[in-house]
Image (cartoon, rainbow, N blue to C red; front, side, top):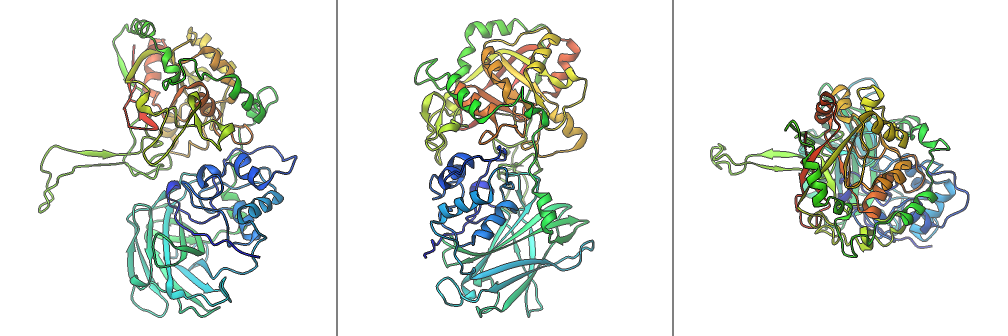
Length: 604
């Protein structure tokens, strides 16, 4: 029996927060109970969509290579059931124990290895629960033998320390950058320090004097870590890495502990299995999404993919999609809607603070004054700079037509009009934002569902159905039609103002998949939401985490606007009792870009 050696490296494409060959990108949609056994490849590609981050054969992509593992099947399965990293919990409804064994064997190619890891790491709290310890103890213990039969040489190890702020759902963990951490090795009285980088990491090795033990098998070596964290929930991850090249380090051990920052002191807790399970419990979809008259199945989505295509409608090489419906005649008609001459912005600018719903693209929003005097530090001119991710959770933006691929053929990533996505370090090769026109003026329609239902904002996870859209049309005295820009308000920003930020990307009100045929008949030009347009969770089984996005962008060629700010326009429209207006926006021509900031303006 052989074992495939794998390289454990940080997952930069998913936040650089947890490494290891276990980090499978598993979509949070929970499917129905499995009725027939799937092969490992079918589980990897079709059911779980792991290839999106880890490559078609586990060779790596935005996530690490996972073809081969040194972990036992039991450890592998336990981690998937109760993960501490960037993926959601894999429930038994999504994958049975037999499925996990099949997936494990497919990735590794052999039965689970019986040889233990060379190094085991553990992190323990330094005081009982309820107290406020300021230290965490890291213990590294050599196994009886390494994989080649010899005791591992601890002196060649490096330790990657990662601090991250924890939030309830996948892909929403934030690195704790520029954090000073003190460490004291066993047998020493002095404390040393390191500072985490912008990914919340620090790589320590022999050159920093950070060496645990002397490699003797079975003898644990310890170090104490302490720091000061702001109030909130955090996690500390320690990885033992073997090798000399920082870019080619093999993972030989992992330790993770959940931290709570409180009153400027570090509180470390090692959660019990039930507590950990509770922390990782998947968010269930709203019960209404599962009603027999509303339920949308995987098979139905596949049919709609084929039946609703706009491919070729404006020519085989078109890259604007339904924005073509904004004709000169449509623009002139929209201009006639201006009566009062009052304009309000539809744009939300990303905050310069990292929160649960902001700064979630591993890019910290920053505003600074460059060109400071190197000696005095004084500002030498009224010049400034800014940086943020276009897809930031607090930034209103238009998704380009290359942002989502056809879900049924993810082995060959295809975008609108049947073109290959051709995604690389430069961006998209087809359907990019710079090919979608300079800007547009058309009729805007606000669909204010909280106003319709007499509430300030919708409940989290609340789906919006066709009857809601038609009831709004009757209430507002308008009919949504061809070439319109439709903005659906759920009250996200009102809820945020009242209750604070939350993980809206995993739990928010929005359109249910069953509205897709209705929207297709209306032939709209663009769809905007104050969150992500889709109700989250979607309630659709299998791979369809965001079915509205999945159909509109690659199948119809309909761009979507995420994180639109509709609070001001809702107040003005209610005062004027008019919910149609002229809307205008420009497209930022980001070369090969996957999105553009949406700085829309509604004029009444």
